[in-house]
Amino acid sequence: MSSVTHEQWMTRYGRVYTDSAEKERRFNIFSDNINFIESFNREGKHPYKLGVNEFADMTNEEFRAARNGFRRSPKKTVVEVSHDRFKYANVTAVPPSMDWRKRGAVTPIKDQGQCGCCWAFSAVAATEGITQIKTGKLISLSEQELVDCDTRGIDQGCSGGLMDNAFEFMIHKGGITTESNYPYQETDGSCNARKAGAIAASIKGYEDVPANNEKALLAAAANQPVSVAIDAGEDAFQFYSSGVFTGECGTDLDHGVTVVGYGTTTDGTKYWLVKNSWGTSWGEEGYIRMKRDVAAKEGTIAKAFESTLREKNTASIVRWLVPPCGWLKLNIDGSCLMIEEVMVLF
Image (tube, rainbow, N blue to C red; front, side, top):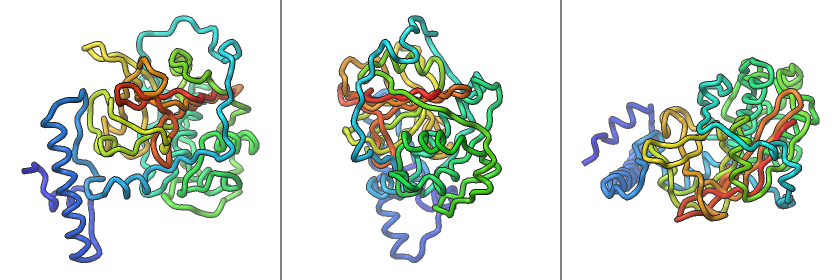
């Protein structure tokens, strides 16, 4: 038996259903998910645990549709970047661990809610990080501006988007405003040009990080938070609770997140510290540790690693595999970590 009943869970997360039929359907889904979580943890075959969170009454298909919004551009091709031209090509020594939260470059965990705009949260988090690094000021920037105003290309608000395009939007517009000025609404809206006109941070360009080069990603992450895309489509990712994630993943990037550091556990497992946008009830207070230093080109993090930097404020983007909202994939022993494209902001 689960330690949490459906009624207790409903009370905790304020869930209300339209009628008894819907409640019964959700109860059955909840029960199936509880069985999956408890069975997974009982087997103890993995270095991470699953937990009952606010997504416990959703099927994996529903969850992916609501939370993952990364879109790969049909015109996007991987540009092979010479390591010699990479911004951090000459970085030969990096600290054994990095946590940009401790250095004041990471805003509190945010929650995209039932809106597939992970791409906006990923791009904004990277920009917030580089802004703090360059100016000393940590400013929470507006995802809603991107949702409402960055709609001429592949980016379509809650219907998904691409971090590259978000950076292009900020470059061409001259920057982005603050979250307090243009607060998040969890829905598509009309662009408020007046609010968007109050620029708080800006970038001037970005470059790709060498493909399939985890050392390049490490060099980037040692110098700034990096925007990435991942494959967050499997059940284990939906209910991830703690530990170093080594779950299986496909090659369809569907979720945008942000690498805000890296480290090594007491047992020697190396990991990436990743900031998500699903609130603090998911994962380790909103974060996930994903295995790094994989041997194959395809594995735990993903084949798409993109980071961006800007002249005064530089941000990074990495792509990890996660359905509609992610980018990075690298497949190793069933894990999902691929470094394919990384962009550095300048």
